[in-house]
Length: 256
Image (cartoon, rainbow, N blue to C red; front, side, top):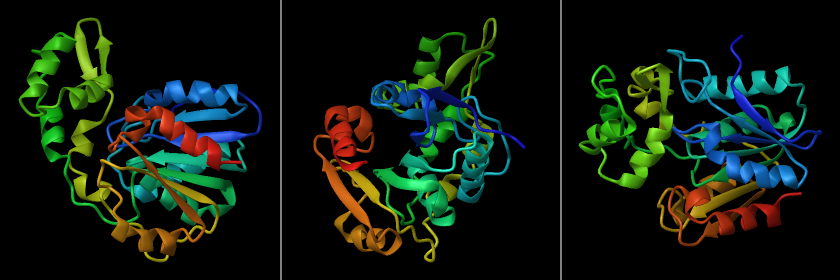
């Protein structure tokens, strides 16, 4: 059985499991995790399959991602946890909590709804797939090559966190771009209509994002009858990075 890589901060039996978004990794959440560790949480920053330092597989989709999480919790003998997921990680968290509610004390979903989304990452994925690391020997040269596909510098900086030295003088990507560039429709997949989680659920919405619309609230209520929604001002889809103060305040005033 392949086990997800994680960074664990803290100890004890008050477990908080964090799932990153598409093309991200657990390390993206380290600053927040240190804060939560100081509050008494044992924080697990997971890398989902084909991301970060976790294993690569040709199999991909939310059934696999949810199964990976179950295997992780069972391996670490975690019977109950608070689960937080952003974007793709939020979709994994919604799928998991609906299938295995007995594991979840409370659920936090950051800027994603249970609906289907059209694929909109293809330009980014094509850019990442086009990188030729036999020619690109520095971070700056990779950034320059990627800029022809991804204009926004902030997005490129996020993507470039996946760069690492495979060996001396040879750069590579931690993400399995060969598989991920083919799974756009799977990433946008909606939650199955019969998936319902009755436990306490917090949805966080970036006001500038557009990922969760007012018209989606009926779907939130259907799948998560015991849900609350908090809007995060001055933040788009990366609300935890764009307005961390409001993001943390919303969570910490809600959870138990």
